[in-house]
Amino acid sequence: MPPTNMANRAAAEFLGTFWLTFGGCGSAVLAAAFPALGIGFTGVALAFGLTVLTMAYAVGPISGGHFNPAVTLGLWAGGRIPPSYIVPYIVAQVAGAIVAAAVLYLIASGKPGFELGGFASNGFGELSPGKYSLVACVVMELVATAFFLLIIMGSTAPGAPAGFAPIAIGLGLTLIHLISIPVTNTSVNPARSTGPALFAGGAYIGQLWMFWVVPIAGGIIGGFIARMLGQEPVSTDKPRIASAEDAVS
Image (tube, rainbow, N blue to C red; front, side, top):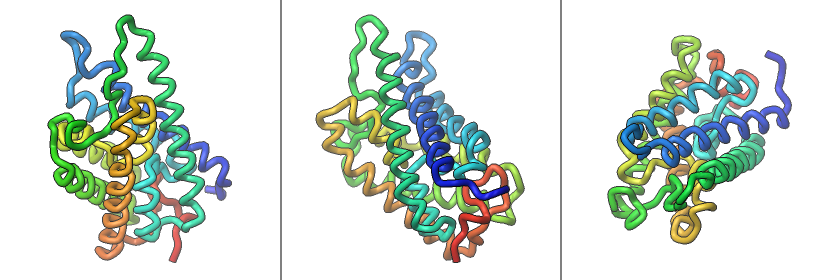
């Protein structure tokens, strides 16, 4: 493929993160507890996985399909992208998540008797769905994000079956949500955490630091581990998480 300019890459990251936040958080806000027909935790987990799977095929060939600051920094740590990609990608991802949360708020508030509540935000302690402690939530987010990066880098390595990476990554994110929704409402993505928290406000904003620091640390750890295991830095898969032109030595 011909080189893609950074504006197009950033636009793809904006759209992908918008869809992830709108689809995943939207399923939690609008459909999870719908009377008699709610999709529950399983439906929300699947929704998040499907957002990544669909946008990896739709715009992955343009930007690599990160849609997540922790993934961007993890892929940098793993040797897949140069540092010049980090700032524009993360800015686009956060912007996409905030706009998605705004659109979701506009829709959700159209229901009579609407109450904002947590608005699919992440939290620990009293704001954890299961009231899990800060330590438990830190461990969950760290481990989940590190393994998410292992899945991403392994499924996009040259030796992996071509064309199947988005399926593995989407199912991996679904599994992560199935495990961790009761603990933190599942972040593993600082941008996804930021959008809803800005609307939920108050204590959710006060806890947002954890959902930046820990997923990013987990992503970097996962990227380093994948690199140590010998995952080559160039992926020939399409759609892919990192293209040949993204690789750095």
